[in-house]
Image (tube, rainbow, N blue to C red; front, side):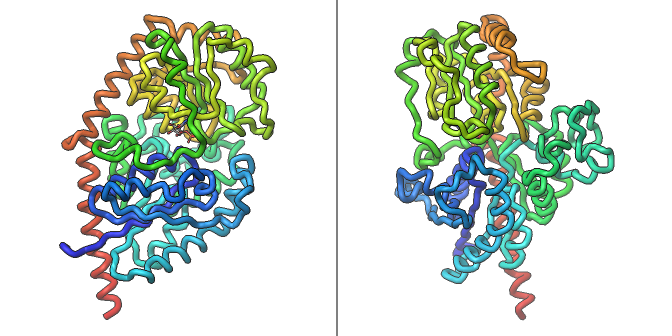
Length: 477
Ligand code: UDP
């Protein structure tokens, strides 16, 4: 095996919350001696814009990470975030053939490599492309093990009348192996009746069918957070909790520019604020919301009297309207609030002035909040976010809920934020967050669970590559 040249072709989903862990997985694989070709959609490359090759610095540090792009068939200017359904319809229809062509060409250009495919679990096509080229198929799930386990057992949900899950239904799902119990109100939006005709539901059904043929499944979570769920999954296929990769030791984290928007620097503004006094507010890179929600939040924040940094991403409104805030809001906040289009979230969360995070509960944001020991106030909107909230509040106990009813109300928001940010309750939540942070640091030590899992994965992977190679050689003979 001394002369083996392992070459991972990695293809992430074109969204920030997937790109971030994927980039860190690439760095990690390269640091273990793998050559990596990291593939972005052309539209992502266009958005990254600032640099021709985001991995050039990582390469200068000695890692063999190459960079390539594939088109999705739509014009570069097409607003993929706003027209998400249409983009995904095209991705489901045309992208597999483009990947197939790319992989075939890459393999022909250097047949001496031993190739493998590392792709996002959301993609169904690896189940076809990997066997066609005799590639070891590694599926990377960038979210929690809980939100993997539910659709993994799709047939059980169906058998129990929980797929599609009625929107108003409140029943316990207590039959998924490794999952204690989850109420139907907390399951992912794509399993619910209102989401059933969406492209996401179709894509997820296909993806969770396809993942059954993956050779390995990696999870960007750690064993300590979801031990039963991960152990139960391991009985079906080799699953490895290797996260949170964004904080893995000895990686050149800053070596890759992967932010899809330019980052505003909040440091100067935060400098004048007392410790733990500022609420950081962000709903991630992807979700859309309505003007009405933004207005209630804006007034709620003002009424709370709490200082805040609020990320309002361009295009956050589902209407496509550019103006997300109430008129005159900028004048009213006067030094109490800073609104930015995008920032370096980890830098903001780790600033001592930041005491809490009002978040949509995206999985990366949740991990980053834990890593920085910052309690969360949860406002999930869709996808895996309600399930993440359940874990944060009920299991890990370092967060509270923003609003209990269906509609946001400015007075309720103000009360909740004031209560959340006030001394005693925040301190208790912070103690829990700090414990989680310590557990994370431990998992990422060289003998910690995630690091050991990663090493075990690499060993198993190399053995599998040898296996596949000998099978193919036998078949040719
Ligand atoms: N993020 C960032 N700057 C911002 C807001 C978000 O860098 O101003 C990053 C954040 O650090 C996280 C990602 O965007 O890594 C969002 O991922 P998450 O899974 O939380 O939510 P999603 O965007 O997938 O809904």
